Length: 264
Ligand code: HEC
Image 1 (cartoon, protein in one colour):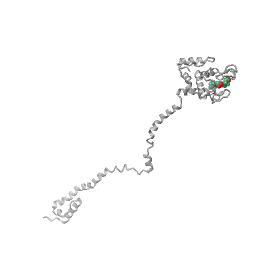
Image 2: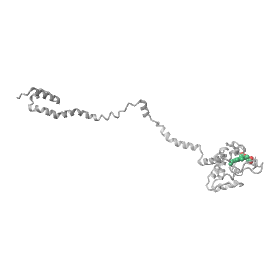
Image 3: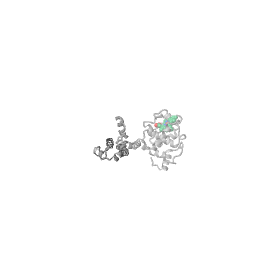
Image 4: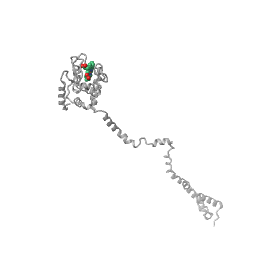
């Protein structure tokens, strides 16, 4: 048995202890000097491994690392409430989708068909325009130099819309005191009465202002003016102007017949 110096043994024990090997004295005692001499070399080669070993548990750390990222900063409760709150309640969605359709349907019940709007718009334009009717009959048809048209008065005078048209085209009869209208009113005569509009207004304008005065001022039912409305709409039937002095019931009836409009 070779005598191993005690300090070498101790160094070997220390190395083994470092490497996590058993620190029993007995193997150290049996280690030959050659091995003991190699011990430092082994320690050298294993040292990096030993050094790397502690880093191994760090590897799994790489995965949990990204996790803390999504962890949001503590959000204020009121902000959280604002973010998660539903802006539009579920029940309101079909209501909102249907709303435009409902608006169209509702508007349809308020407004008469489009052609009525057109005829009334043109009629109002004529009535309120310069040199129109409002200057003598009042902006609202309440009367002035000319008689009032509101309150059903114009309907009492001209029960038939065709007589109304004839009146506007021809104006007051020449002679004062001539009776006119269904209620036999005494005319002021051409000099002081109503001017003839046959030359100033187109046939369409006269139909439109007749419609306007009867519906908007006279309170007539639009349905009773269906023929007038159709004649106004008829394409290529109306003359540009109604000639003053014509016998209009006949002329208007002829126009309606050629437009295929039923007698009214
Ligand atoms: C310069 C004034 C004046 C203007 C402008 C005038 N009127 Fe008249 N209008 C009269 C007078 C006056 C009478 C009454 C007729 C008479 O006594 O002969 C009358 C009567 C009428 C009547 C009969 C009403 C009734 O019950 O007696 C109608 C309808 C009418 N006018 C429509 C119109 C229309 C439509 C216009 C525009 C295109 C118009 N007038 C423009 C003065 C006017």
